Image (tube, rainbow, N blue to C red; front, side, top):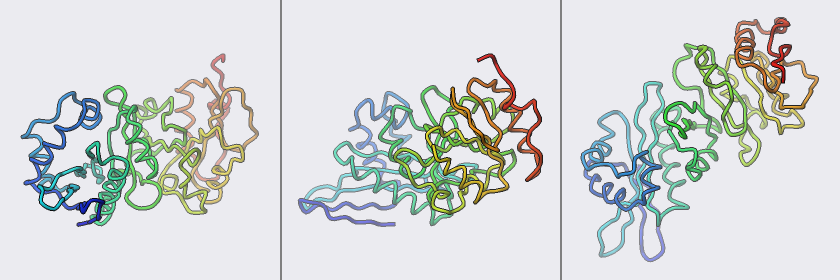
Length: 314
């Protein structure tokens, strides 16, 4: 991996594999970050100590890899202005870490991430995961434009776990299929019953859908979506899809995957899919999803005790 870009002022940017000898340059990079930047990168108010950075620079010894971006100027010492790493995870994906010097932002981050994703794909890494502060809009935007999906909001408050794929428009399900997989299509990627579904034994993944700024949904391009194909049940919670185009695409492309519709408050809809109404009790919702998972394709609809027929006195 080596990419070179000519810059104004007779400068050159080189992106290459990280080496243990890059540790001093990485220490200088982290030391030059502002307090907020340090926290968004390391979830700490202090830059990492030198011995920690030295371990970061040895990621290849742990089965991962890293990249550094170095600016070369004639007659001056090269300056390390960015780093990105991919550490191996038990589920087969890689853990993302990325830092860009303030003066290089706006272009180097996407460039460095693209290089990392390309190399990960070449190594057979299907997805890249990351913990991101919900206030880190720059990072979330960077990942959203690559089709992120949300793995969960557990852990420290204000942190979201996301994943992007290394090939295609959307990621694939991480890890072995040892639990029923629940895909929730919802703007923002946060679903009210995420934790309850996880506790009930589901592997939950939330997709922000094709609406808003992201329009790379493969289903709307007539292609099967790997997230839906790999799911055991889908919750459609996209209230701003008036033509129900995504739902129609699922019926055509993924006819054996049951879809449940979550309706916003005040909306009634005549649809063949089971429905979750606003204010519905989470236990009833989970019960409905469990029945849909065990229902054979083309089988009878859920019984009258499903979430579609219950009320919580809203």
